[in-house]
Length: 244
Image (cartoon, rainbow, N blue to C red; front, top):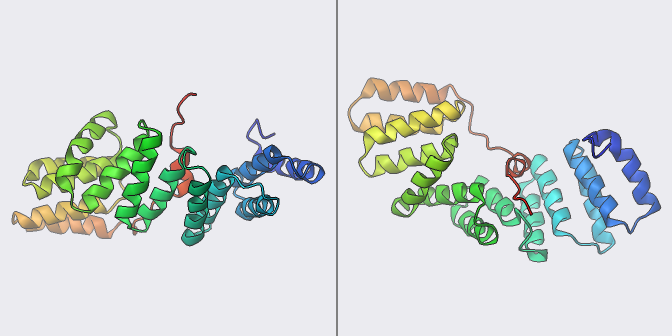
């Protein structure tokens, strides 16, 4: 059932198996993955707690617990889990990215940047770490530092809205208003629910005296829901794992 992705069906069998073989960590990890995939988040946390009691510490298990806590909207606990995972195995794939993303969602840009850089030291081909690293630079007004990476990343990943949003911000800050408006429009094409590009466009229109266009952009932004970021689980799932 697990192999066929019937995770909810697999859980009772895996629970029975772990009861009969409590020292089998592979079974416990498979159970934790099944619980996470079937949105049984308290089940994930219970498995994690049991592993800690058995002194079977695992960076992977800490990360799964962190993803479960994030789904339960407990950011502080998720950060604690990912910090524990980093300490256990700083080379675990996505461990620094996950912690960095948690910092990013809390607008802690400097801390997020450090973690994204650590992930890139482990895996220089980690595209999401590149994307979010340059975004932290933009949000800290380090435009000159961010621009070369942004332009290359946007060329290689043209459907990533965050890159176009950031290019719009950088171009606007450096006087390239037409380029900025083009990039912000592109960002809305790939993410119609994000208010940020509309707000940035409104600033540009206001600065050049186009009040009607500025008002229209603000109106579009107001009609959108408050920004909601993808969950940590969604973000990690979107990352392509390199072939061994």
